[in-house]
Image 1 (cartoon, one colour):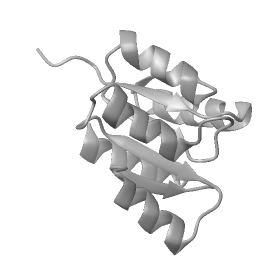
Image 2: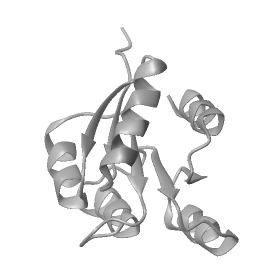
Image 3: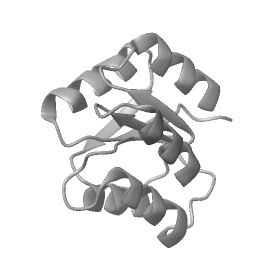
Length: 122
């Protein structure tokens, strides 16, 4: 039996975290939220997630460094990871996808784009 999907949201801004959580809740997708990369790694060590939404501009360890830790340290090479950023441009988009993010979504978050991306991934 397939379980209900659950997504880990890694976003340091409270408003951004709440907005993403609320969007997913509306779509009947469970989520858990953390504010930094270290917490995300701790959660990923003990919980199974179907996807991770990662803000690229995190304090201490940024989103790209977190992605590398997820892929290399934890060994989750196939875990879908979605980059979100307010610093959107073609270079950032290209570098994020090249680094191994499954998808890239600029801020402000387009709810239709996020929903369609999650539907494809989940």
